[in-house]
Amino acid sequence: MDLYLIRHTRPQVLDGVCYGHADIDVAPSFNEEFEVLKNKLNAITSTEIFSSPLQRCLKLAHASATHLNSTTVMQDSRLMELNFGDWELQPWSDIPQGIVGEWTEAHIRHTPPNGESYQDLHLRAKSFLEEISEKHEGETVIAFTHAGVIRALVAEALNLPLIHAVRLQIDYGSVSKIVIKDKVSQIGFVNR
Figure 1 (cartoon, helix red, strand yellow):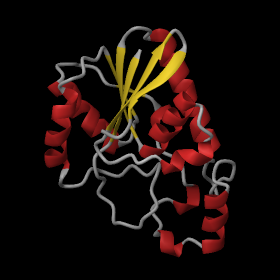
Figure 2 (cartoon, helix red, strand yellow):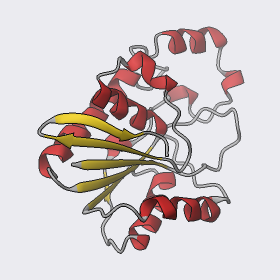
Figure 3 (cartoon, rainbow, N blue to C red):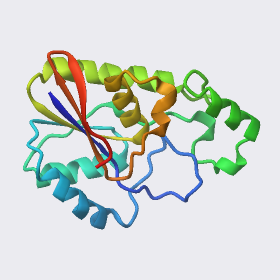
Figure 4 (cartoon, one colour):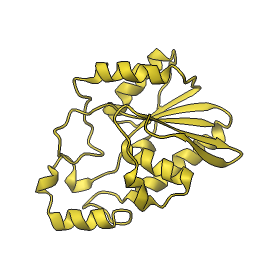
């Protein structure tokens, strides 16, 4: 299976605001960003398209499906970004720095208040990957998702400790590729 992971375009949120599960719309630059992504999509012939149910992914997934002459986009909540709980839509500068520092230093296991840990995100993303790799062996799949999920899945494919996944650069509108053949994962590319 060839799995293309596409990060949503720029969301309509101020810089410096914590967001994850918040259902934020796309920025006004969506059409221009989509034009750039179209060139990347032209090389992909997909049999299945999945998306996070958050609108910043769904809008891109539906526009891409139309471009690829596909009719179905399947939503999967396992592709959602990290749930930051009480931090959602708060300026990072308003979040008590002791809490942020603690979460950042050991964010793999620690959970923001009323949120989820990165380890939890990794487990749900891994569940998605295992399920589709069994159901779509030898096929091409596209998943429209978020940076946290893409980092977790790339780390999984590389057998990279999650603590290092945050170092992976995943730009808005970028494409990453994981290849799974005979239950062996390889990285085709990251952040194109």
